[in-house]
Length: 159
Image (tube, rainbow, N blue to C red; front, side, top):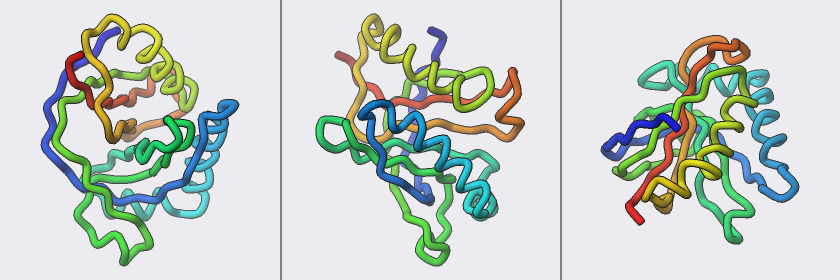
C-alpha cells in the first residue's frame, strides 16, 4: 500500500463526538449517520468556520474495553475557545504518522482503506500502531465523487 511517513508536531482540535462500538460493525453505520446529522444540524458549518483550514477531521480516540468502544469526533484544527461553541478541545500529541490516501466516494472508500491498512500494511510494515489518536483528514470537495481524496493518519512506532 502506498503511504507516507510524516512527523507532525502537537496540534489542537475542536469538535463534537459520539461514543460508538465495533460490535457487529455498529461504528460503520453510526459514524456515517453522525456525519449526516452533523451536516444537517449545522455542526459541520460551525466547525468549518472555526477551523484554520477548510479540512475536517474524523478522529478516533479514547478506546475502551480492548477497543470495542471508542469515541469518534468530527473536528477541525483550531485554537478557538471550544466551550464557547459547545465543542470539546482535544490536544493531539506530536507523533510519527503513517498516512494513506483514500480515493472514491465516502464512506465506502475510507472504510476500505482502514480495512486494508490492518489486513495488509501492518502485518508486513515493521510498525505497530502507537497508542492514542488516529484520524481521517477530509479535504474540500465532493465526498460522493469517484475521484474524491481523503487521508487516513495513524500514529506508529517500530515493532
